[in-house]
Length: 282
Picture 1 (cartoon, rainbow, N blue to C red):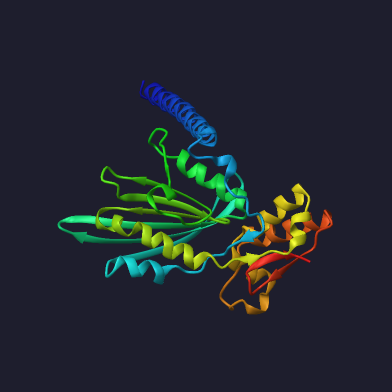
Picture 2: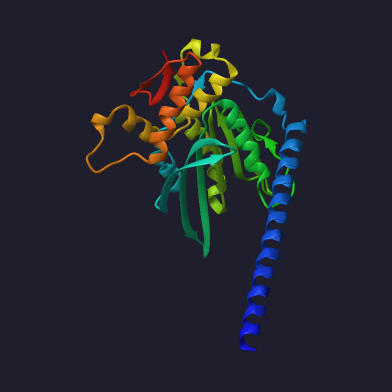
């Protein structure tokens, strides 16, 4: 009898896991569908005017550390920075997070800045839409920055509170997406901080004109290669500079040669520019 109870309990546990997995899969599928529907809606929204977002295809920016710039606006507050390489829809990107907070009148106020470097301007545009779409809240409208006196980046959008303060600002400069979120007294500094960041990342790397002659397939591979972790690429291309105790990841060791080989098969030869920290077409 005891053995039968054990078997029955085991069967019930398996059934519960199967039902849970089905429910989770269904829920996730619905989340993805909702996000896709929101992206399509944003693209069709006349106030967003996505079809006319500027396509500065030659500009690729690799932003420097913005710690000092942001620190000017955060005062003596606690400060945190982190960096990671991520992927969305097969596109690699680098995102750096700057976060500062302070206690004021018994309330915690926070200022967060996300700097996301994509492999191309087109990817940056799509990434911003995905950021808007993949939130728990329903479809939200966004105000163009110039409507509230904030003219930064190639495009700029904001969300304001009831009294007109900016608590979220997004802007794109070439292939870099900036997102600023502020609470409390930090909201009064969003506009000035956005202008300071935009001023710091404006210097750009001008890719050779002949990169614009690449076929769509080669251009996609070239952009993917240039979206890879710059530090890893530099160590692979210049192994003599690698510290003895530092190793590149197995993923990078496989990815970089594979992308270069695929480009070579399409008749495109690339070289690593260590000063600019990117690949260029020879």
